[in-house]
Image (cartoon, rainbow over all chains, first blue to last red; front, side):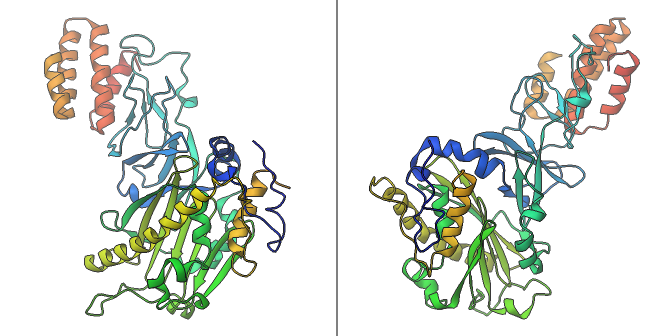
Length: 375
Length: 69
């Protein structure tokens, strides 16, 4: 289902946004899987979801069954969630796997590193080897992964340039936040489900234009003019503020700062999307990650995780912060769902961008258009 | 034995599951039924392996000795 993307690739002054089909069509949703998701570095979860050795969690990555696991060696790996024997799903629910990963069907077993270590009765009852079964070639299929800012990124196709090269500029920009991040999945993680295409969540996140209208509470201290665009075409898009204000309890208690930050971060906060689907925020005393899980062209689950500089932070303050961010992110649902409904209007041509305010959004559209073969 | 294994599995008592299979395997071995013994040892091994039970390596050694692993 090719669409004309030439208008998207125009300079912002004359560009239109992506055509409606990119938001509404099942066929287009399927067509995006390889170029936008499988051939790039996409976020699938946060490292904190498998905190202990042996913790494993199944993932559905646009229909591809995967699981993430922290091995006995402490390393987090992502595997295709399938036994090399009969294709049975190995990990059906989050659990701790003390020993081998055993297939529930015929009990072939794999080590935490994915090596096939047991093939019971494969040579007949009580005979556990067979000349035709070379265990060395039948390990789990590991998916290339990289952890950054607490997020587990994967490259399913296995042939994308190294994550550190693809995102070198952003890694450098936020080098001061490349420190241990402390998550608390009990009280600092939540999910929001939106009846919208995943791209609209990204687009809304990339721009500050909507802040005074959609988030009037934020605008009371963080005005539109206090924000700046972050726009690295082909790499990342977002926005920043120059008046970040720390959240505090009534007695003035605040979160501890990340160690060693430069003065810039005293009042700065930055909010950037790592294409395709990870929306990150950094501030002096906490960061957050929103991992978008598309469940179809018109449905997206946002998995939101807050991270702190220490494990020792006041629970009441964490709760207050989680409520604050959930309130902000819920305020966005109305607009991303509204834009989704709007894309059923046959006369909508992708929309015109504000040349002054929509640069990061246009950059994201161009990233999509180029990867979808637009010229 | 199968009833006892089923109960232990239902209770999640894998240590007992391994013990039951090992005991049954030893009886078969004593009776000279090596095929049956190795079948049962295989089950003891796999359950021990999954649970991270320290007996797994010893049981595997027995299977290797019989040329079954």
